[in-house]
View: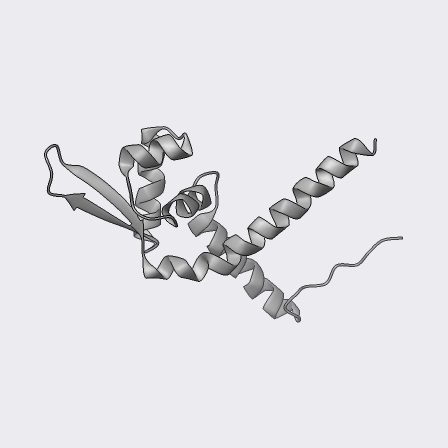
Length: 123
């Protein structure tokens, strides 16, 4: 028996808007690294090399991801007056608007992992 999935938001016009807003969200935080970087920075500011090490990400990719997060107002870049010059990254207050999204993804990830573990052990 086929299960018919309906749009969460209601009408077809609202569904199109919902798809656009989901795409907008993915454009800002999608990909392999952005939410990982945001979750690391939730514990406080980190220097560029610390972020690279903690995330296990190349400096080239890290630089690109941080630029995009900064451009979207989620991360703040601070050049410190040290010798040698160091750069620290921290979350902006605007990044808190992602808290519900991150929490929902965390809950779903736990549920999915448990499902996968139990389906393998039941085989």
